[in-house]
Length: 121
View (cartoon, rainbow, N blue to C red):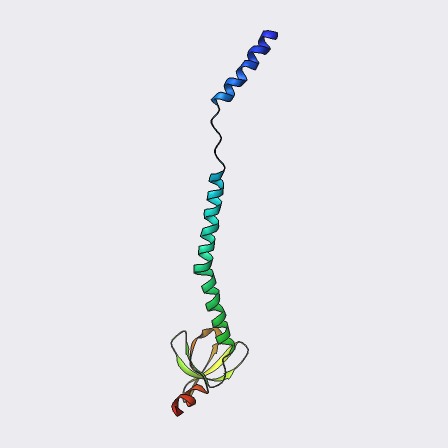
């Protein structure tokens, strides 16, 4: 029994010698660093500018008032005659008025007071 125990114990150093070397841990840190850098680039090039445009658009929609000349997303030009909570009434022609959602306004061409100020200058 004693000889069996000594021969069994003699196999362990051989098993440790044949074991593959452990991988260095800096590879994991490089991969994690790469992911963090890519997320930072994505944030500053895509997410942040999109949020800025979204805030500007929300401000434009909230500041709509009677008399503003607008262009809708469908390309219709008109003048706002009535502003409600979620929609606006747009005068397109003498006898034609449309009710549109505020989200359908693409841009404000001229504000109510701006046209008079520019013509006086």
